[in-house]
Image (tube, rainbow, N blue to C red; front, side, top):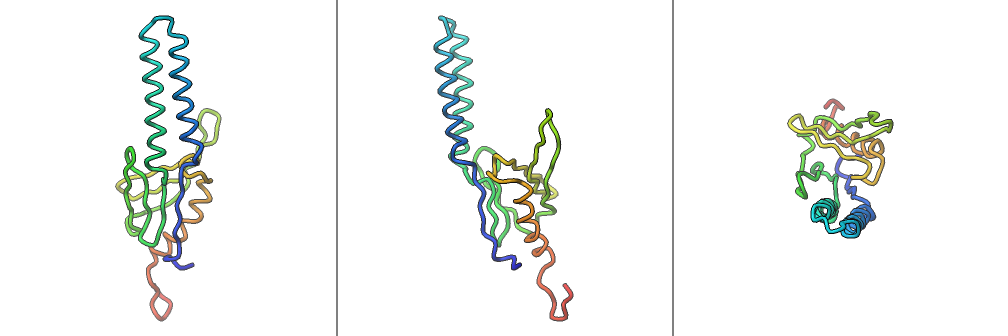
Amino acid sequence: MHPGSLRRQWRVPVKLPLVKLTGAGTLAALGLLFAEGDPVRVVLAGLGAAGLAVWAARDLLAPVRLAVDPSGVTVVTGFAGRRTLGWSSIESVAVDDRPRFGLRNQFLEIDTGESIHLLSRHDLDADPAEVAALVAPYLDAHRAGPAAPDGRP
């Protein structure tokens, strides 16, 4: 497995921002429909709809949540920013698996020592365990470095 051969991106599924935008429109329509002349209901529904629309905008502005290439790993940070983590700065790639509210939640955890980046199944549109299994060997290969002629690192 040659460390330089990996080039892969994981994106938010296309339907996710569409669902969020549909929810925002529905929430705004319901707020107007059931307002009965109460401006507070309209404002609350408008704020909720605006929040969903902003959340959908993030998915549209930064659809690639994780990109892996020979130079390292690029993750989304903040609202729509990106940060490239060199292979040497990554301490571990693992799956954080824990139950919450009766459901099993898995997150891909990329630990740099200074920061931890968590990506869910919805961020990756893939199983975090499968992504970790694909990325971890390349991290190990970069950590090992080039082998000496006699086979020792």
